[in-house]
Amino acid sequence: MTTTDKLRAEIRAREEDLVELTRDLIRIPTLNPPGEYYREICEYIQSRLRKHGFACQMIRAEGAPGDSGRYPRWNLIARLEGAAQGETVHFNSHIDVVEVGRGWTVDPFEGLVRDGRIYGRGACDMKGGLAASVIAAEAFADAFPGFSGAIEISATADEETGGYGGVAYLAEQGHFSPERVQHVIIPEPLNKDRICLGHRGVWWAELETHGAIGHGSMPFLGDCAVRHMGAVITEMEESLFPALAEKKTEMPVVPEGARQSTLNINSLHGGQEELPEDFTGFPAPVVPDSCRMVIDRRFLIEENIDDVKAEFLALLEKVGKERPKFRYDLRDMHEVQPTMTAEDAPVVRAVAAAIAETQGKHPSYVVSPGTYDQKHIDRIGRLKNCIAYGPGILDLAHQPDEWVGVEDMLDSAEVMALSLHSLLAPGKDAIPIDRET
Ligand SMILES: [Zn+2]
Image (cartoon, rainbow, N blue to C red; front, side, top):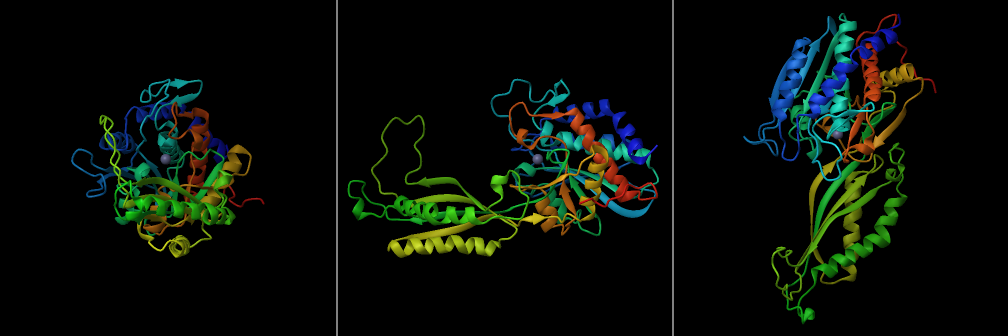
């Protein structure tokens, strides 16, 4: 029996276990915000993995954003040592799910199974991926107990709100340092035949234009901050958006529309605060002295964040030359560097070979338009050998009637188990990890 056949048999024999594990995870409604049931889901996974010999550590991200007595940010790291010294392969999954929203036709926290699909909030993003990695690790360890190195599985908080109470916290504590962990796979729903190498960069900033308050019947006695912002937006339409569309990237971002620099205006507010809905009177006639806009600029690996900021400042200077009273403040809110793991990195080669071996085709390499926890593993953990690979269709994430396919989970569990074999149990029956081109 070949290694592939042996692991496939081990995975297929666990189909029912995989389905029940996924359903159990869905039934714990780990909504974030505010961050419900983190402790419960970590304890559930811990009690399962302990039975399989994993050493488990529950870690609360004390003091992280959102952490409180009512909503503690719990995380789990489980580690299974092999029979000999070697490298560590780490599977990292986030435990939180986003709000349910409208439009569901099934119970979002029941874990309904129908026609080979498991439905529920978080089924695809990413409890299905977490379950597949647990099954893959258990199947591999049972089939090859003499493996070298170690397997780690982490279940982490708050990915949907930035990961500061999850992977960022653990990375700061050294749990993702290259001395400790050599290969990281994040089972986000990227489809079972795609390997996600990284993501674009992010710069969020708030621009405030200033004016002077005055009576609305004599606007010439004031200075309208909203008109100043209007001039900024006009300039963005005329010069910035066309320039961003020209900046193309070599990163294989999907969808293809995101293979360029982009900018979204997240919010815009000028003048008086909005009146309460139950207020039936009129607003007052006042010239707005302040207008605020939050921008979300996504940038490419070919760009430098200082240039990204300088480009926007140059636009503001240009507007200022044409408007003598133009005054503004620009406040940095948040930034993330772009990251992209090399196609010849060991974890990429192992997963690519496993996809080719089990699915009979070469994977496609993709990059995510938005960020995920790889950003913390890269920047804080300094670990470059990291990818996202997992079952599920990305477009279903955060949607009503979210689901994950059982067959897809089995297929990706096979890939994960075979990848563990090529990274931790290389031998004469090891699968070759050279990719045909
Ligand atoms: Zn996710």
